[in-house]
Length: 114
Length: 114
Image (cartoon, rainbow over all chains, first blue to last red; front, side, top):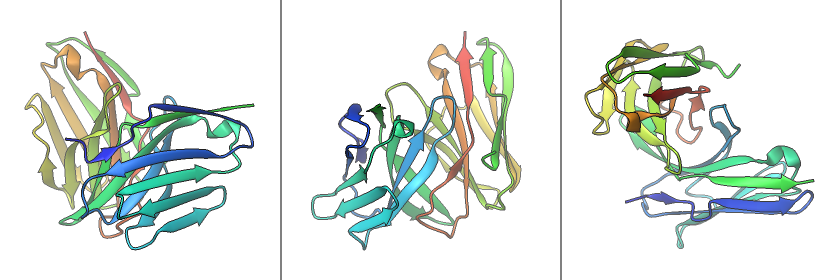
């Protein structure tokens, strides 16, 4: 059963508007949540993360909100730019021994139209 | 240059072939990972190496055999693969004790089994 779910496969927005990407999780033991961005023919790149003890983290145009009671997080991109068009993966992190284990969602394709 | 280099970028192999995927990281990280990305599926964790010891093997078939000779290099040896093994294979590394910073991914090897 999937522990991290991205239920919408795609989103299309106009340049300059807000993009909201959603993610749900089932395991309350996750201690960090992360967003990755992936362009075609490239590996995923780290975008932003949030600790499970916080409810908001902001970095420039990107803000991640965490609602622990609902086991839900979202990534807001504002203003959206055409260069933001990519596949976005939500991931959740838990410590396992000496390593950090990341569990990923299926990804969501964002298209920002000029 | 991401700091994690994977070779080859593309590989086509027959079901009776033996090939190896290579991953190299120059970030001083102490944990390395193999992930599989199939179409419309979440990134699937295959193997985790922490301090050159395999700490996780997610029920991966024995036709996939990992090797981690040192903290900078990771291999995935392939033999008698099936067409359903065709996917993007991603290597990643992390600094194990730094939870929440996620992984640094390579660009992946696009594998096609014919």
